[in-house]
Length: 227
Length: 227
Image (cartoon, rainbow over all chains, first blue to last red; front, side):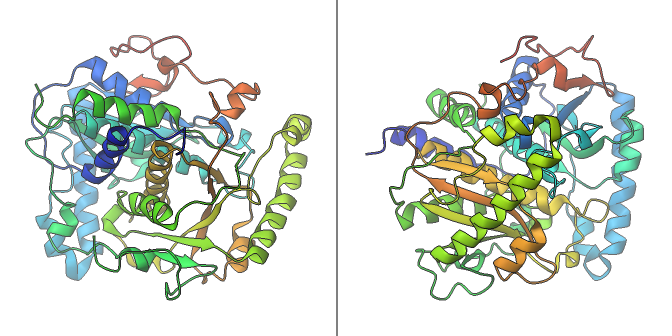
């Protein structure tokens, strides 16, 4: 018996949040209490960070005009992405790719400027700041799911233009537009899976042993079916 | 009442995992059941991914010789990092920065090669593959914490050399060495906080409104104390 493990019910709750979290694109207009939003940001802020640099900043968008500008920019980029996808653009255009105007709260998440000052754990891997901030966002996402709040991470934007819109300094880097809000229902499966965009890999396709490729001979009991 | 929210006990469990997760560097030698490791990787695999690309692969290191080589490489890089930190290298050399030889299970996490084929959500933000894989690792980390298993994300390595050690193809990218195992106790606070390396920012320092900088006038109820 491991003395550090949570109770069975608690363990199940953590796995439930992981399993039922979805990248949401459809929102209800019901507002979110500021205390609840602060709680979710605090969960993010408890994320791990390389060299304890805490590189994340959360910009809450409350000005409706700024929200419309961000939406306009993402709409332009969505069309450019559809064109770049060429033969798949029809499928793509049918998908709803953001919920910027509909969601209760809109956040832009950015990495701080002057990140070069942080060397610990980043000397050969400077991109670990993004990795840290992504872990923080995953905390936010899971806490939100437990609280019954939907989150969508929109990455269809030009970082230079979004930086300008949000008055972010040179050297800082927007990494996410988070749509946050109540939802009518959580998708039972990822939207891109349901629509047949791609399938979830089986576990034995993503686990290797002592080198790249082939799970044959892998000693882990990996389910060979899609899960 | 939000019909999608978990029970109070479940919500508390998710927040507890978020609060008590630690980047661990000290491990016991007790083995981990393969089923348990597979469960944690499955939690990772339920992470979000841009365009549903599932860019992550997990290499389980079972060959002791390979583990020693990885440890040797990280040790070299640790010394180079200490030199690069110059005036802070004394502090740094006192910190234990990895648990590669001691942990029960060692994983190298990598991004797949041929990622350019994935355009959806990455046209202007190609680094979203790393963001996705980081969210997956955060899932792994939180599930492990709930199960009482410690995880340390080591990023002190040269990606080119680690790729070679693990026989990874050109275009793939190692992003993490994960030390996974039983621990005597979880640190009560992040090790870099306890040792005075840096302090945790107060919430009002990381939340802005409608633009960068200054939380003055922020309408969120952000705690101004360190938490």
